[in-house]
Picture: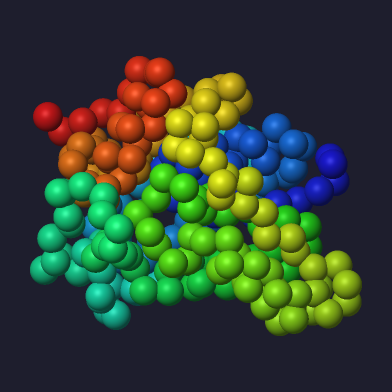
Length: 226
């Protein structure tokens, strides 16, 4: 595995750093990729850069994409409020239209340039907010696209899209990360984190994170605003 290269989508949050630590433990040479897409919670980008270095990535890229000019999400449109009433069975306004499709397309291009064998993305379809681009069906469809749309895929050595967290609960992800030595106090998951990376404690992401630590029976190391 020592000669295997992987691109890791790294947001700076709990799931993606677990993914990076897991890929490193499996022997991949990791190149991390983050996006400055107009999100209101930019503290995650600083966290991602720090985590990339801390967990031994070979390189770290931050790609600017102006999804804020499209709008349609409370994460990119400051005129919309981030919901704080708890997770529901509806797709919330924090869903960013086609975000994972766009991110994965960029990551796929990076994989081709680096001749990477794997593309790791930390989507989860268990303890999540119901985003359609986190489901196994979406990943399977993107894998088909990757095989068809790239030179590497056509030549028979395409990139494998890997989603090892997709069927795990948040508690299971946290336990996995703790076993890999992840320091979750360095991560930023909150949709409304302040400039210091402190969490609001009320948004869907914060609630799922809190619940995960509670169910894992572990102390929550998250830094909160109050």
